[in-house]
Length: 91
Image 1 (cartoon, one colour):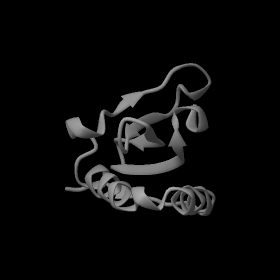
Image 2 (spheres, one colour; image 1 turned 180 degrees about the vertical axis):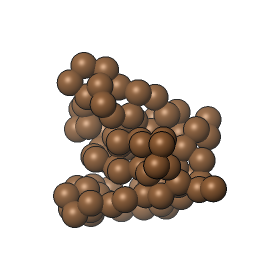
Image 3 (spheres, one colour; image 1 turned 90 degrees about the horizontal axis):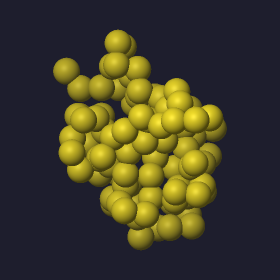
Image 4 (cartoon, one colour; image 1 turned 45 degrees about the vertical axis):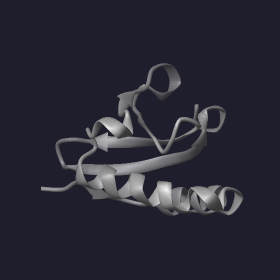
């Protein structure tokens, strides 16, 4: 059973701004979200939990430079993206 992505209004604003600034990443971004929904533990996503002030969040990679931070609720199979950007933007 696939996971469900829940895209909040605040995340959609962040994602649209991100994609306007980096239109060359649209395909990779869409592929990352699709893979995240199908299998968040796929090795190419490099899913990992965060520490410190982001300890309740996880991160997946769009590519080596850009990431998506998210809430990952395994019990409900729900994934809520929180932020997208380069390392300094999301951490």
